[in-house]
Figure 1 (cartoon, one colour):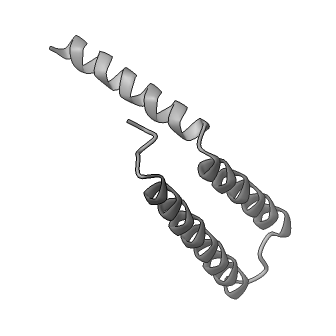
Figure 2 (cartoon, helix red, strand yellow; figure 1 turned 180 degrees about the horizontal axis):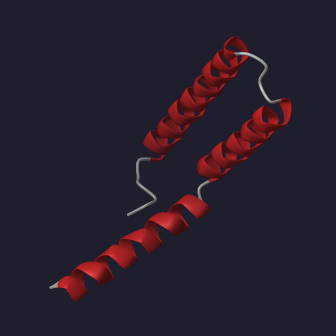
Figure 3 (cartoon, helix red, strand yellow; figure 1 turned 90 degrees about the vertical axis):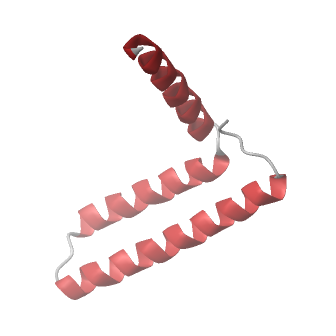
Length: 82
C-alpha cells in the first residue's frame, strides 16, 4: 500500500511540476517575483514604512497576475494540470 502511495505521489508531483514549468502565467509570476525580491534585497529597506509600501505593491501585483491567470484558464475551459 505504501509503495502505491509513493508511486502516485511521484506521478502527481511530476505532472504538477511539468504543468507549472510549461505554464506562461506561472513563468511570468516567477520572473516578476524574482525581480521584486532582487530589488528589495538590493535596496535594503531603510524603514518599516518603505517595507510596508513594497509589500503592498508586491501583493497587489500578485493579486492582479493571479486573477488574470484564473480568467485565462477559465476562458480555455480546461485544466492543464490534470
